[in-house]
Image: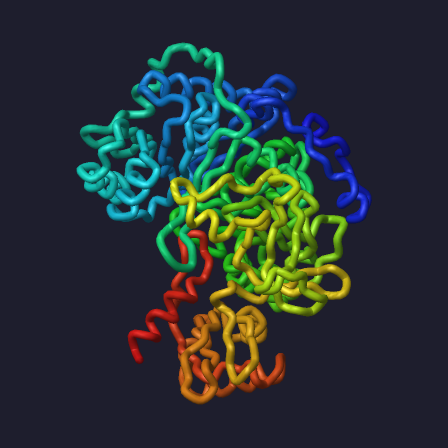
Length: 553
């Protein structure tokens, strides 16, 4: 499959990759037709989607099944009045209908807007009004349908509501009852240009209102490097990415790149993460490739992983936040597997990472993906030297890279704030070592200035994470009359350590940090909590900790 989209399909090392990675973009590319239907013609019986829920139910869809089911769903949506360019919010948790819905929307040229099931009435109203949502396809549980129903009086653009069950309230179409009567699908005469909007995500963000990030149809092709190279997938691979379908990470790891590689996308449909059940699932279904945010790995390494047969695992990756070196080492000790880190945003595909031919360095994000022209810049726009902190930026003066977003929908001013003069500013700070590896420091607004020093949260968090009692932590700055700011650690302890929370353990953690990193970086304030505030995608909301601290002043 990849020979249709790359001029060179295999690479021996990173120099070869940098020099020869070149995409072939078909005219009016559409992932549903040009990848999925092509697989259905070439390998109709190969497994495309293996869905399992926590009650033991499972469904296995071949590529031909996916084609037939998405044709039927596309016809059903057309019969409801959904068509090219219509904005459709998709709230389906990890239900298998999510994959059928997104592909069906691609087939008719509608815009898919995945969203989390945790949205409140206000969240839904905001998205409906911002995007001009025409239809909502949702899971029928009490909370979701209630929030949607209550949002309708303030959502004049919404004309169509569809529930996949089990609850189908009055005013909602019944997917499973009605879809069987959908007429035979006929592909529209014209579906899309490559530059049309295909997909949109409302970023949860670490501050401010959610931004509506829109991607064109080539975005799906941009994830070829994610699935084929970073995840190291091929026909026969069984890949599991841990992600809510309302988060952009689902597009990274559960949809596009994995199917370009011809792999089986494995879906574990569960309500709440449980480390033991996740390990049991990997063992039972012989998962070969696994990707999860660092938070998941933090919990996995605190289990006795020797009690599980994880021998099927061939390749493991992580993204979402920087990975603490201690977690990297503990996972390798337990499994023998190296974790390959990747970095990107909802606005991009993978921009930095460790491909299989690159030796990972614990704690490093890896090296630039040549799909993007990466620069590390000072605030004045000049390039950083090695080992100098700077903002990760993408240079776009020559051309827009495949995979980079189009804009923040309906907000030219916000788009221009981050993307101007041929440069897209990610807002993430890192430094580059002498060998070209990038090391995460923090968001531009997370860097702490204390007594003239600039302290990145991640380096202090990594030091704390190497203590046996710490499961998770967040480093923030607290205003101080003498030092400008002082370092604060908000800490989640292991269950068997929680009874020790107090001044004595706080002093122990402070001394531990002083031994691991420069003493001036140690947290002068330590607060023990049961959980950290996070975005729906699992990223720590340090801004919320800062806001809570400001209220206490």
